[in-house]
Amino acid sequence: MTQASDRIKLPLHFDAQRMLDELSTDLAKPFLYYSVVMLTVPQDMNAHTGASRSPSKDNGDLSDIPYIKSIIDGFREHTVVTLTRLLRLEGGAEVKEHTDPTLGLDVPDSVVRLTIPITPTDDVDFLLNGEPVPMQPGECWYMKLNDPHKVLHHGTAERVNLAIDVVPNDWVLEKLGLAA
Image 1 (cartoon, rainbow, N blue to C red):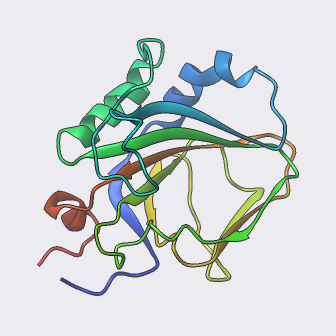
Image 2 (cartoon, rainbow, N blue to C red):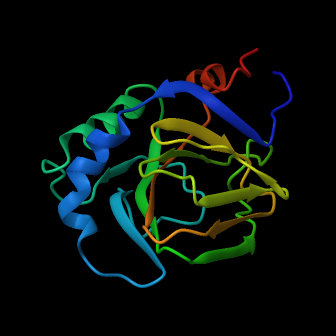
Image 3 (tube, helix red, strand yellow):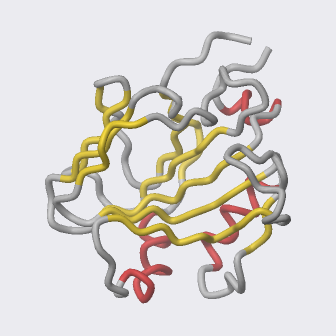
């Protein structure tokens, strides 16, 4: 296996406008600073710990977001999806620098987070190891989140990402360009 970079854009692309259109009603709900919408949850909530490698189940009926559900199901066809969330960040907000110790390819028995920006990101700086990650809507990115990262939102409109946590199997490694 080739050495992983701290950021890799996967050769996958999704229709960000279609995702945004599906979410337009949910996005009207007020929130402060940062909001997490759980789309899938661990099948066994009692056994869930930080980096559970157990498959997730839909968190209720996702029929009102069929395109987003099809993206989740597409990943499920190839790997174990452990958690899926919409991450919303209010305009002008900042996520302080932190690390997620269980989210890196170099962590034994970890899961990895794949991030798909849904809203335009021109006013958002996602900094990983002090360097910006140039994510654009519809792209799919792996980032080594056990390294220091933070988010600076300079705009006024909220930022929304689809975060999909997966078990890094051969299919995932191939998409990352790291297959043996």
